[in-house]
Image (cartoon, rainbow, N blue to C red; front, side, top):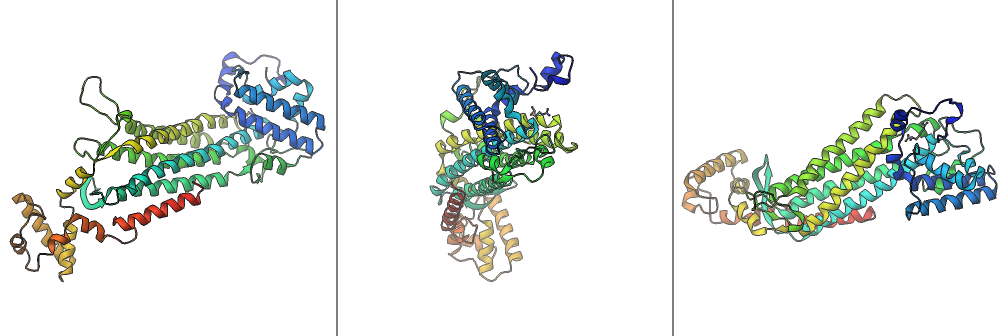
Length: 460
Ligand code: ARG
């Protein structure tokens, strides 16, 4: 049965009925819908639009219905047009005319905007908590690896020595910004559309501040046309989740490389890896590949809603019903990726010796050799040239900077002395980079403390 059947003489075409219906996905908003209705009923009562008895009956019955749906005694009727219809009809079947009074001074347009915003606001908070948990997982591993020297890369070529902690802290900083963005978007969506009516508010003497407060919003939205047609809050959360997924995908890619035989920097726990049906030796990082792959869905969801919204005239248009599946999918995808990455990282084995061993083989201290010559008075450009020739010599003679003799060094410059070996030791190279942001263990310890304090300031 439709809420709007009065002016029609025919039943709606069966296919149109299915096409138009949203209950298959908006049933997810049942808690928000009933909570919104309870607040609306209380407000109507406080404003004298409903009698105290009517208000009492409505709020009691709505709360009872929600409990029954949540404990499984009542199943949502999937033939209803949408969740709003289902709730109102069930209520009316139970309490008659009083149930029909619930929709006074309200439209499904402000109702759905309110339900959806409540949902999006809660999801933003839950996702921020998951991102914070992932950041904490990485912080813990970083704290255990302050001295774990490894090669840093540019162009995926060995570049300069860093530590595993330093690399993990790069990701922690991305995640901190993600938490910040989620908090920002939650704060910006803190206005309640309820009372905007279909588009032009209402002539009933309602008090929108009451519903806003009952529903945990800072204040009512400022314009009824905007109130019913704003979906920025969903777009903003989905934008934030897209950026988050870029970070998770880059991290996943990193782990995929790290657990390849060629790198061998980490080993995933058996519970977080998968095998091959034909190659018995395989231990695959499917979890990471799925995170990398699923990032595309989240970007696609954002594109779908941006495109659905961009040509809409004010105010509500049915196109906006497309907001839900896209947002639900984005939130579900980001959440499952985080929930899987957290224990995967917490259980992975860091192969410190392997990191250290590969770091020694790649001339990643060449910059430090040049800096050594600068310390002896040479201009950096010249020092760079000389070091380049030394590297060519090493490559041709199968030596490394560490295994070159002092005589070898003297072929290139007389100022080389015994202290060159200390200057190019990878540990020294890392320790020497102790400026703000550098990989020196005591500096990364400061970065860890700073990140921990920032998470705390966000309430995590
Ligand atoms: N199912 C609709 C949606 O999700 C509810 C609002 C319907 N409003 C309307 N005027 N048809 O957008």
